[in-house]
Image (cartoon, rainbow, N blue to C red; front, side, top):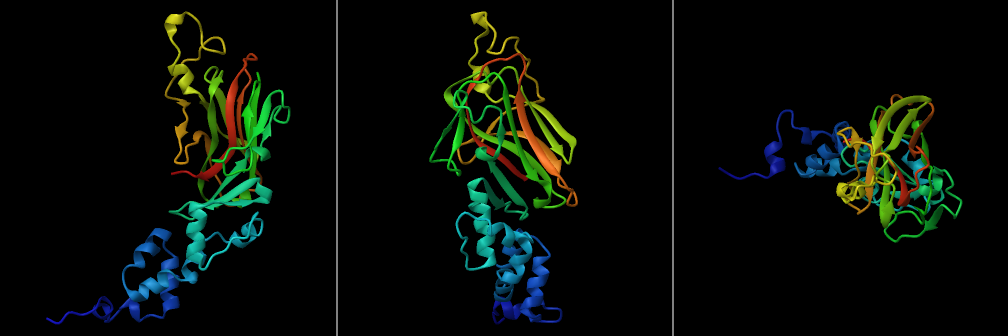
Length: 290
């Protein structure tokens, strides 16, 4: 039997390849970015349609032009597909470098990271307690390192309306620990998420599990911070990110249908005036929950 090309073999009654390319692009744009990439490999016709700006414009947020107009540096791209994957892989600095904007690859949902400079940190501008440093591995031009405090309060806010609607988001504190960090394992830190004035999430976290692991109970002394809080499955621990930083989950919330109001995300430890140091903070990231 004579061999036929893929396109020729697909010609027939109901063959989608007989439709105008713009119609195929519209159909593909109603699926997902992953489906569009798969469709691109089906035939020459679907490849052209799946890679078209008509398709990828639908996967980009409706306000992407407005957000990119706030970029620190102009964002150049040759196609909407290229822009999509650039935002997935290389977040853009916006608002004078106080925040970064990107996309979650599988869904196109918006992701933001709020820099340490844009956070509210108790005594954060007092050099006796915190110092601002530059680290080449940070996406922002400055991080803040905890020198010594007995009251730890870090809070960030983001307008819920700029997030992707009907999406479950998680907020993460992004940080590192200095080699001599201490006092961050006990007592535990408390986190809270408030959406439009309502508390939607509260947890306990332990920023420095290493300090607990190195503690030897035979030394007959408590961990820094006085009476030791018992570890349990409810205490959230940090995880190592692909970029080498640590992240600890502050909580989750659903953006709903454009709920009006701020999302407030906080981490505090203010029990008993226990001293602590060595926390290096880059910011708070808000991204879709996996």
